[in-house]
Image (cartoon, rainbow, N blue to C red; front, side, top):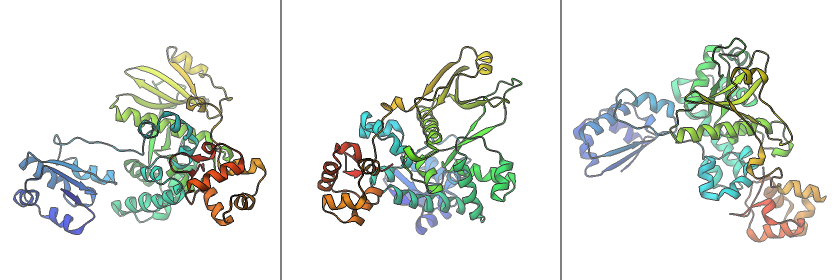
Length: 398
């Protein structure tokens, strides 16, 4: 049985629910799915009535606004529920679907467009999909919660966090930037966390005098959403924040993996008062590991001396794009065209299509038919896999 919390009659059903009425409605069904459950008043009490009085029924309650759903069900369902968190598709899930080699090739694409299911499933329409997600999901659900009225301030805060992605943040500085008081900034960030848009990474410290103890960084669960917030879909080769995107991607993927595995590992970053820093620290039962993320394989990094002296047994790694299969990533159709010295009009004429149509192909606003994809690849004298995703012959636009 499927119930949708967006529908008024479903909300009315739970408004004055009794076990007798719910039993009559459910009948002999064994599985009940309640989508957008956070929109239903007293949903926690309704779920409790079902689990307490109709023991053979399994209830699955889902919600896009997890902060609200969690608040409404925690107390009534204490000891009666199991919670699952679903993030944007993980690297492991995408490997299961696309294969390891193809997913490694798509790293630059993921750094720009992320891995929300709708984005992955609508190849060639990534920008349109992300803009729609950003406008409907990011703001609509959050602004509905707790009657937030300063929508312009929330948008400004989210943009400020996007520009400071992976950097230490100060609530006082953010409050000045956004025109909010520091406590409101913190409460808004908590809402963004509970809606799985951003997450905070605290600083690691064992109370040594030279360590920062209360600093925090903020990352986005999805790089595509982050780029949608600031309206920047440039390819990785030509943007100044590629290193920060790579760090964000690696940290978020690691946290997804740990949470799906129900690991007890604790995640931090480390920074000293003299501004020495390590991107990522992981603590598993007191055993520490440290990681630096460098997009450019030529950039070197070493463990800060003060850290190695304080924690001599820590494993230290530097991870760069080579772990995804080498320095050379798949090129975009725009890069190849420019490298060959062609204009858009010349390519369009060469393959027998209109210039405006070709422009839509190149910008990723329109999927490319297989026949046209082959013609473009032949005209540019490249292998088709260099500039097109193989599954749907869609422009590889980063």
